[in-house]
Length: 476
Image 1 (cartoon, one colour):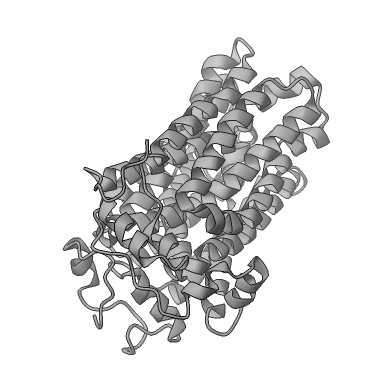
Image 2 (cartoon, rainbow, N blue to C red):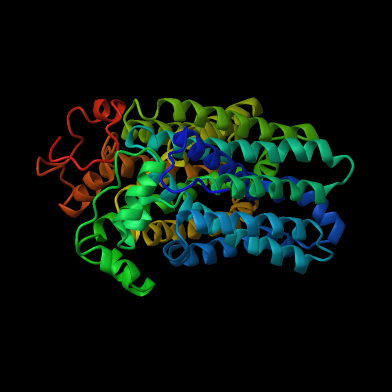
């Protein structure tokens, strides 16, 4: 049951964190479920290579549709309401998908699942940003990424245990349990103060802030509330208008870099990559990718503990550097300068770097800079770029691996990762300890912190650790 109005949650951070973990597990397992079941599904339905590709293309197309719908759904039903609806639909559709009797039914239900995941990954970071104090906002977001990595690892472990019996339907039905639990956990949370403010309801926003034990909802300037009901076309025009264009291009570029650097190749095609490096057998092709994802989950957990104590910019630079090092090891293996065991290390280093950097923080950056009325649309714009890169990798990675070979393919990815590190170094600000209002002002004022020039304000991390919440500060 939802918490009664005005009654504070006993541990609001824990309640939001639990929802984050369950949503992350759902997304992580669902996103990689087909990677573990693909061989068995191919045998069951006698799929051609093109039809196998649709097993990945269907959910990605659904994801893109979900991101388009997410902003409007978030505005209409609220952050919590939209997520609870998506989780419930995901649970039901997962069961139906596992009962598929032909490839068309399987791909169609997987596309619907992709749509629910699109809604989830757009709105979940907004819910986290608006429901917890500044001091733990980054930690909750990284817990979500940690759970996502854990869900990916669970896919391979479950697939390995069930592969001998050919139980691919059981492999696919597991996310239904996680999604149902996520829907129940969301019912304990109130709608976010930010959504009420965007709707012009300051009293209900203050009530929600009390339930969540926040210092208070962040202020919304007078012109913002009336525009909350603006149509999606108007919101997109505002995103690319003079006020927020710089921020929109920034998050769209980050979203594209997250996928084009190769994380989808690792998630979708790890068994194929291991085969190319000379590994064979179910243990090597399923358990080793699972171990890599488990290491990724540990890395994300470490990041969750440390993220609000260290610079987010430094964490992103370090993570991107590790991703680059991982690709360098893979180039060495395929060029036969290094043994195949170095390839396992390279995949692990890349995955750890991703979860400690891009994977942990991309959604934080997407949710922080925009005002409440634009957070859904801004996250959707970033995710569309992300999914566009995802489609490129999903469609062409295996073809490149076959036509160009492993050395050339991973040299290309290595070059992309170097470019990504340079972009992070030149363009990413440090938002550690900043309130949402301060971060928005930074972008609106031409990338300047309170008129003092670019760069983090002195004492920002200390201020966050002190738990000042989301109050609007007049200066650093």
